[in-house]
Image (cartoon, rainbow, N blue to C red; front, side, top):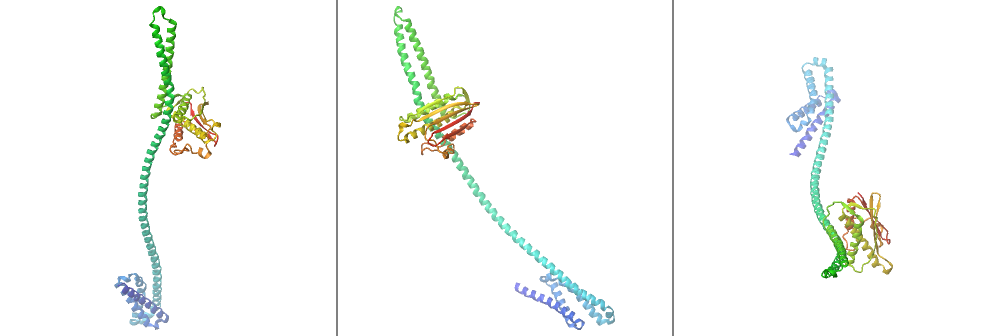
Length: 434
């Protein structure tokens, strides 16, 4: 069917071209060539008939507008020549002008239609291109929506995985912090066990002496009145009183040590209280040392202290600052012990750890220093990072200094390290007095 229409379409346009060619021949030879004129009129009439009878050729309707004036004028001329030649002769000039004008009109109509068809073709092509572009854009939009949906799903899944990993990380971090706390508590407990033994020994010894003195006093009281030595009785009572004071003192000392251990083990309340920083530093220095001695009987080190007595009490969370001091002092003892075992001639090296305090304007500095191996610059920049440790696997979690850093920052202070490889390390804690 499509091939048939294409063939008839070609025939239709050949008829139009033939009619136009006959008109050109007619005007070339003038009135002497009437046959070509009538053939052209017949062809033009056939074309007009085809246009009006077939919707497929409606697009050539411009041809009707272009050719009808010429056909009408040509028929008028023919009938005037046949019916009234004299009237034709008087109107000949006008009729020839009208005929020429109709031809010009037809040609102009054809040019106008041709230009319009080109513009329509361009508009149609543009519309087709826009439609194609819109279709491509719609397809791309659909693809992008699918990709966005897939990416959103992937990001949601990754977000859920990250949230789950974060929960696990926080849980692991809490466990590690608890492990670090329990490790420091174990070291502290060992030191406390050794430290508490001294006041208990005093209590036991003075209790035994008091029993002996009371026995002597009872013996003196059992004598007859003239035989009793009043001076001896008074001396015995004085000695018993002094011994009871000593028992009370060392009992309170033991009680303070136990309370310190309990305070270290319980969760911090964050409540700041006036605290003697010198006494706190001295206590944790000796507890740390005795704790290491309890684990390693061969460990020895020289302890040095230099406390500024003008400091007085400062407002701190004693439990938290004590934990910081214990961590720094333990690290100092670890460093000097490692250096002692590393050196071949151990007798020429004396492991030394010193703790000192000093008041500077409205702040207090606590200095923990050792004469161990020290640290290179690349390690100094990392020691306060969580989970970073220079100790062998199993001997440190890498959280001690990180937690210490956070505690001091919470107090509004600073903690810094001064160290060079081979020359020991010095940690300086700065805390505000108020």
